[in-house]
Structure formats: C-alpha cells, structure tokens
Amino acid sequence: MRTLLVSILILVLGLSLSASLPPHCMGQGCGGWGSPVMLGEDFHCKLAVDEHGRVLQAVESFQVPVLLYHHITPEKQFSKYYLSKEAFAAQMDYLDQVGYTTLTMRQLALAIHNCTPLPQRPIVITFDDGNGDIYQYAFPIMQQHGFVGVMYLIGDYLNGEGLLNIAQVRELARSGWEIGSHSQSHVDLRYVGKKVKDEVLLSRKGLKEKLGLTVDSFAYPYGMTTRNVTRFVQEAGYLSGVGLGVTDVHTADNLYYLSRQEITGWMTFSEFARLLPFH
Ligand SMILES: [Zn+2]
Image (tube, rainbow, N blue to C red; front, side, top):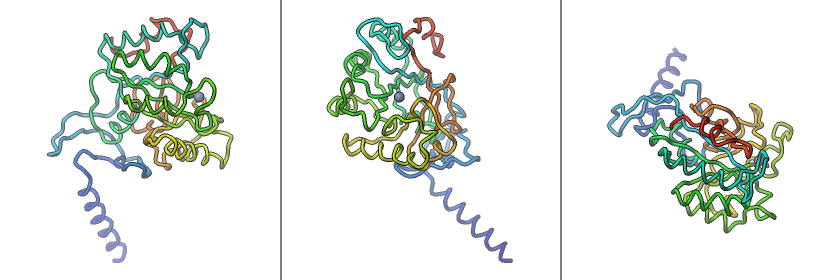
C-alpha cells in the first residue's frame, strides 16, 4: 500500500513537472543559466516544436563543423599552430561565398539542449589560448564577412605578452564573439586531482569578474579529459565542453566533449575545404 502511494506521488510530481516545462523543451536538458544541466539517458533531442506544440522539424543530431585555430600570423610559416593571414583570409572568403553562418558555441549548445533548429549551413569558428595575433589579424578579416568567433581564454594568461588584453577581449565580445574558459593554467586536467575545481571554476569566476561577461563554454587543455573531469564541467553549470575530434555531427551525448577540427598551418586550401560538409 505504502509503495503504491509513493508511486502515485512520484507520478503526480512527474506530471506537474513536465506540464511546467516550456513548450520547446522536450527533454531533461533544459536547465537555466548557471544551474547544473543534467542529461539523463532518456534525453533524446528528437522534436522541435512551436509554441502550440506543433512539430516543426525532427532533430536528432546537428551537423555543424567546429573549427579550431591558435595563431594567425602576417608571414607564411610551415608550422602546426601558425596559419598565415592570407590562408586564413582565403578560408573565410570561401565560407562566405558558400553561404556559411557563424554561430557562437552558446547558440549551438542551446540548440542541442532545447532541440531548436539552426540556420542553414552553420559553422562555429573557435580560437584557443587568447593569442594577441587573433585580435590583430583574424578579427578584422572576420569582421569584413560579418563573422563571429569563440575565444577560449586561459585565466592566468590574460594581459600577458603577446596575449589578448582586457580591452581587446571586451571589443571582441561587443562585436558578438563569445568568450569561453580554457582553464586557469592550461594544465592537463587528467592529472590535477582535486585542483580540477580551481581550473574549471576559478577560471570561469575570474573571467566573469574581470570581463563582466557570461562564460558558458569550457575548452579542455590539449583536448584531454576524463569521465570525472567532464562530469565536473557539466555540474559546474557550463552549457558545453569542447575538445578535439574529426566529426562535425553533434548530439546531446557529446555536448560536454564537442568535436573540434583543428586547422593547422600546413593544411592546404583543398584539405581545408574537404573538412567542410557544404560546398
Ligand atoms: Zn590551449
């Protein structure tokens, strides 16, 4: 009898909870800003619906290339992390010609969380480490095309030599760029034990305080993580976590390790174009 009463109570609570969800929110991934986002096994981002509950589009996965750059330099270099500004400009020209729309990581994460459709030919352009040359060379080129980027900053490195300063970061943000956290000290998080809290939480808090900006995405240093670290990033309230990978297809299952394709300095233009799904 007792078990029956408890079951009825759970059922009633469950029904009232689901009735209070906004109409576009069909799964458990509909957390608010700053609160932990819990994605259970039953989270399936299948349907996007309008405010009357009508199905607009079936959405299970999102094909969105997420590119990763480190340095853009004035001269040509044969180096993994340094791409010439000419090569970068040619890549951006191509994305514009083909009709890509740049998204922030927040837009992609919210689309996955809430099952909402994205614009045609979406792409996310990310930069790691907060290098000053991105402001100097990449930012103006992207501005010419009306593109926005996502900059992942290391807490300890802000304002350092050759790195972005606060005024530059604020300008990027004013132009529509998103600022994410790339940890506090750029350490490999697999080996930091309990200090993972400082790396994941302090970096976010410090960036928010110094910049007055929302910080909702986390980039794992070296693309390295463990199950525990990834869970910690999720429980800390980030909307997404980003790493490295080869796929451009994203679902709720990889929201805390979204695959980013690294664009290296030695990549030819055709190698770059081959990474893209739409031509
Ligand atoms: Zn890095």
